[in-house]
Structures are given as structure tokens and as C-alpha cells.
Length: 165
Image: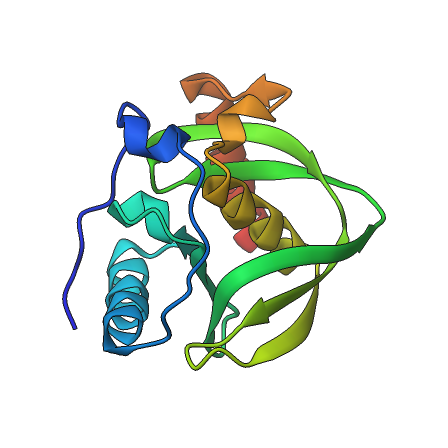
């Protein structure tokens, strides 16, 4: 496994639509393993293949107790609504408020090509939507209805510190 460089928003690769994965081979396994290691090192919640320069439909999401691999993922169903703050490893130090579904059901393939379904709520649903948008060349900044200023971020951090006391 190896750490891969995470592309930032200026890179045109992030604006391109990814191709489906058609070969479930050692190259895919290496990509997924590298993405897991890169995500863990970056302390992120999700990572899509285009963020490491690979235009294939593959995503890693950290569920807390484990990381899930989503190859050729498709959203099947959404419901509810949530408002929340999002950031992105490809848009460092910028955060925005984004509306997302509160529940998402998707289907995807694993590293061997077997199809499965997975459901997520709240943060996981938000992450699924965020990461799948990367596969179609979009960043969260396009969906944000408000980008937070440095002052707003400082205030949020102060409030979180007070809540933790």
C-alpha cells in the first residue's frame, strides 16, 4: 500500500466524469488499498478515485468501525433532509453548509465485482452523496448555499469547545 497525493480543486481532473470500473483485478485492489491508507492518513471521512487522479468510479467511506469500498456506486433511494457543514480533502480549509438527504440507499460492487446494497443515515448519507458527486466531476462547493468565513469557523470551534466542557 502507498499514500497517494490528493488533488485540490484547481486540478481539472476533479471536473471530469469518471468511467465505470470494468476490470476487477490486482490494479483495482491496489487502488482501493492505497485509497484506504490515504484516507486514514488524511483523517477524512471519504475519498473518491478522482481525488487521487484516477478517473474510475470507486469510493472509500470510513464508517467509523471500518471502511467500505464502493465500486460503480449508484444511489437507489433517498429520503428526508438534513442541513450540515461539509469540507473536502480536495478543498482544504474551506467549509460550507449543504442540504443533503438524511437517508441514502445505494448499490455498488465490491473489489471482486459482486453487487451489494448499503444504507446510511445522517453523516453516512451525507458522505455517500458527497463522494458520488466527485465521480461526476462535482465538488461540494457547487451545492453549498453558504461558505463559512474564517470568523464563522472560529465561532463554531469555540462553541464546540464549550459544549465539550
